[in-house]
Image (cartoon, rainbow, N blue to C red; front, side, top):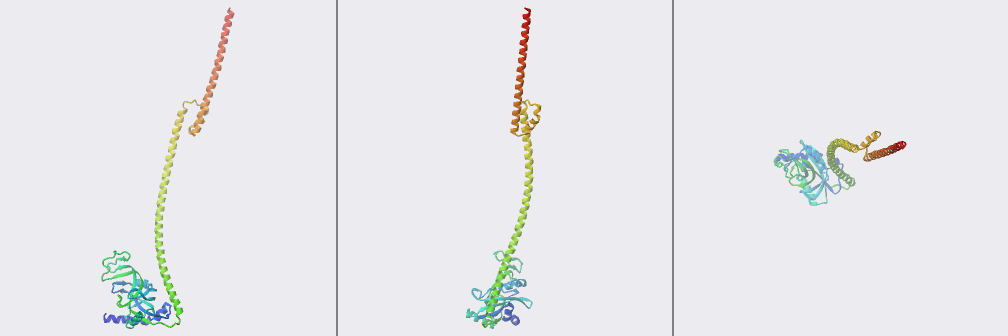
Length: 357
């Protein structure tokens, strides 16, 4: 490391210590020191590119700096060796760049080896931290293509080039005490040893409330994402429903048209069938002697039901039979009268002949 860079980091540390002491940060967070804990303030991450090629932009730092709260501090990125907890975080500007200042608490009796190492490194100016982040989306700083980490094998070939990659969507999930971090500015600012018992109870309550608030924020964010997804799904369903409704309306118009055409055809068919039936009935009545007095009944019977027509035919036949019977009786009567006249005439002839004799 160059002498100039050392002086630069030393100046940052001096500036920060003046305004970012443990007591200052605890006051900003609304917390108090807890008995049996000691505290460390440090830089978690800084704006720009680190030695691993990961780039944090100002926008993403301001959006995600507080996601570190309530996450663990481990030793050398070994997540099974949890040695502390992040309890507060904020963003400040140093020489035109954004820095994430974080406060972590460590249990004094957890492990004396880690505790002594942390204090020893802080006193020697070598207590360094390495952030841990769950990055969802990267942006290539060369071609600016976005890469979703859930889609392996779809990144561009220049994502890991010297120009680096930008963390676009991410959350901080913890940090590790390390000797050689990728971000050389991520080092301790202040350290405070454990405090007395006084004020412990109130401070514990405040820390518990802070943890609950952070948990509620995380839950709220998750619910907002769910609501957003449901809103998108709802809009999609509404769109599909509108299209379906339009399709149904078009089908209903088509069905109505076909129904109307069907009714017209059915009406014409009934008319043709009726005309045919009337013609057949006319032919059936042709040989019957229908009197003019039954003309109206005939017209009605031609258009009526089969029962009505059969009844009319029967009436006509009965009428004709009665007429024939009357005619026959008349003929017989007239024949009898003629016979009687002839007989009388013969009698007269005989009588005349008798008179001659």
